[in-house]
Length: 235
Ligand code: 0O2
Image 1: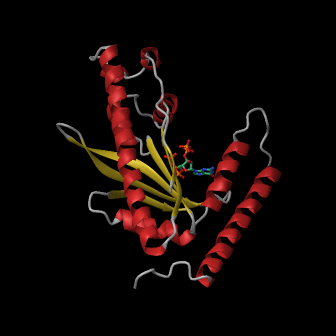
Image 2: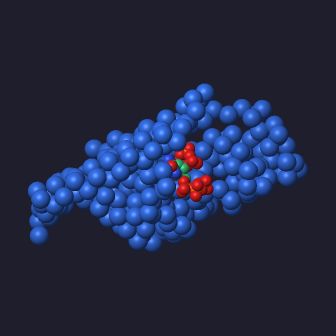
């Protein structure tokens, strides 16, 4: 069974949008508040759609090979302050249109896989689906970031079907192995520790840890091949 973490619903108050939506000032504050909540609900629906697609692929694969390619699926919705910060940083107004047009990562799904090959197998099976459109693909596994970060990132659109309309929503998907996830989670915690200077030596140590995690993935891939883990149950 996949360990699935649901994104917690952010509690926002009307005062949180006091200074927002400047260019939508023809609307009253309550409409803005309601419309913001509605847009966030659409993003949550899009995350559910994507998570279901990966759950289905996992189910099919586990029937054929008696193992789960997915270890966990996590989803998160970007917080209102981070949304505002990112728009402001990139010179956009804080409006609903700007959120939809200029932000790719309001809805984020992280799929943690067992082996590196599973990342590519799942990404290929997923992006082939005819309701998915790939907007961008960044392969930080083949080309890791200078600090050692590895993951496969996809920005996609997916339709959501509401009672009276169909909406096309953007979602950022990060696919990575357990080893990649372990490194990225701890690196994030260490790098953003408040009141502690992150030195060059620490960055070097982390880079070496990233290399170790890469080695670990390669060794696990070799072992999987040796035990012929992915021999089909029924040919
Ligand atoms: P959060 O809270 O996880 O969302 P972007 O800023 O997204 O428009 P960029 O920088 O080209 O453009 O995006 P990229 O490189 O695809 O990275 C986006 C996300 O990948 C980040 O989101 C992180 O989640 C993850 N990520 C990228 N680089 C690193 C890294 O070096 N270490 C770790 N731990 N995670 C990384 P956010 O918005 O930074 O944060």
